[in-house]
Image 1 (cartoon, rainbow, N blue to C red):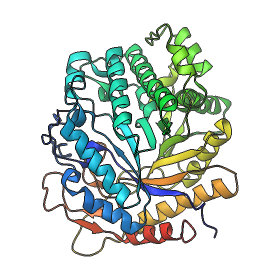
Image 2 (image 1 turned 180 degrees about the vertical axis):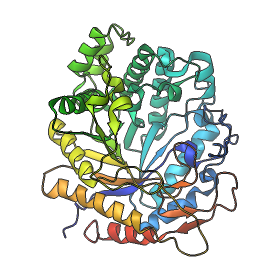
Image 3 (image 1 turned 120 degrees about the horizontal axis):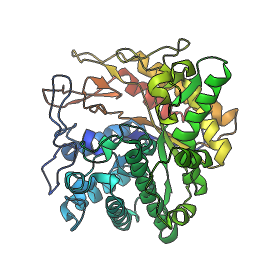
Amino acid sequence: MSELRKNFFWGNSTSSMQTEGAWDEGGKGKSVYDIRPATAEVSDWKNGIDEYHRYKEDFDLMKEMGMNFFRFQISWSRVQPDGEGKFNEEGIQFYSEFINELLKRKITPMICLYHFDMPLALSEKYNGFLSRKVSDLFVKFGIEMVKRFGDRVKYWITFNEQNLYNQLGASTFAGNKNVPEDINVVYQIAHNVMMAHAQIANYIHAHTDCEIGGMLAYTEVYPATARPRDIQVAREIQEFSNNNLLDVFAQGHYSKAVLKHIENYQINAGIKNGDFNILSQCHSDYMCFSYYRSTVVNSEKIPENCSVDDYLKYGGEANPYVKKTPNYGWEIDSLGFRDILNKIYHQYQIPVFPIENGIGVQEKYYGKEIQDDYRINYMRAHIQALKDAVEKDGVDVLGYLGWGLIDIPSSAGDMRKRYGVVYVNRTNHDLKDMKRIPKKSFYWLKSAIGSNGKDL
């Protein structure tokens, strides 16, 4: 088996609220996550895996695996406690030292500016990204971070999984939970977020030698049958959930189909004079996405006159032709991963960069190495699919980043759902000692990286 190109990026991705802890240390302000209480099923967000105090230990583990790239997030409320006004120099110093420790280990940093953890003050005062003021404040925050760290950090993304703001329900991530999940609200939030992305991307390209790309959550959606309506519905989901953002990231304009939909449904998306001119200047140096699973859509389950925004809500169903993850039933579909790499690259001719991929499974440590062969099989299949996209399909792929490869609470705050090749010794309600313990997959991945993808 051949290996990948010599400058291929192998690494890890995380968010600040799932890793750092130290929610009330170092001058940090509260985020919308800091006030979420623990329940019987999930932990609170105050401790993460104590990365704030233990990041050097985790960087050493990444270096031991041979990783050369790490995508992490700057917590907006750590560097600017209220999201506006003065910046917190203690928080900025923390990230400066964090970056220096990565560079010492020859690990290239990538900064993500936002991973859903809105400063609480902006949520309560302005309803988050429903307000264009918050979008403008985010631009100021982002540009300040580029000025502070752009000398050492050359790879950037603005928003984690930006297309989630295009879905009903995502407004709760972007602002006050009391904001109604109205279709106009969701479109306004999505547009305000895109305006923030475009302005930061335009600044980076005009004033720095850094690179930036957009990022979305990509779920492969198959038609349930060969019925023409199933195929049409799957295509429309692709256009609205993915292409609409990718078109802006790559070409500086929204999808014409989406703009027609806004017109036909008389949606108020909050588009202002001059916005399209700002978007027209936007472009990307690479196209980033997360990929975990595929799904199926059955058009016969979708009500008449349903908006495309709700197709999967009604028409989504399980794929009987692929295996599922234990505990959570997510479809395991490496061929879908290869297909997405092809779709993005061949449509836009911009290098693609999958920066999240992994399998979440419930695991417990009983004093012996965790034998997570299911994780090895998952990573092997997806890395091979990536190699096939490169070698057989001609796709330009920059790297492969796993998600949360040192265990972190899941996106729901559930420590039981583990993605890591390193076990962190804590549960939802007992922090224990948070000891880092490599799993069997740690050594497999170390071998795969060491051979640059040749030895899978």
